[in-house]
Image (cartoon, rainbow, N blue to C red; front, side, top):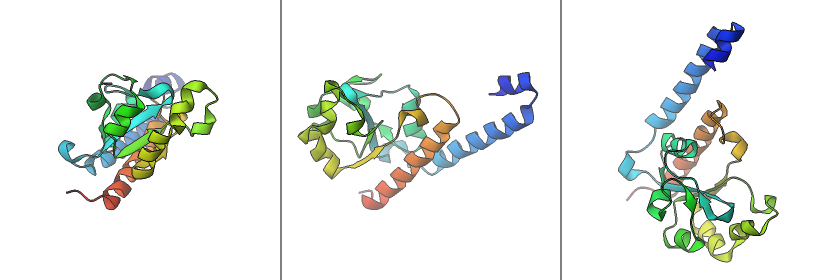
Length: 161
């Protein structure tokens, strides 16, 4: 962002945007629980793919105060996970990149599987469209804010033991 701003002569505006972005992430991070007390979350995609650690989505979860459950499900860097694994080890928050009816493909059938629906009934769920966090744009701060709000609501709903 700063390089583009330098090329266009608008560095002050870019510096202000970067500072605002950093401040939003810092606020979300400061309000989160210690690592060992964080609620778990997974980003479940069509074909049973989870977003693993070291990815932008993982960083967003972490900044918002969640622990990515993907490594516990043997999808450390991402990868396919069975519905059975999600049912056996359900996260506190199950995230989707779009509503299940948005995908017109057989590999999306897992999103409407009765076993996954049962987990969705018992756990918090949310749909956060990829356009808001697929790339490292300033919109990722909006996603972190949404995730942090979900974490706060989850804490009220399920107080720590």
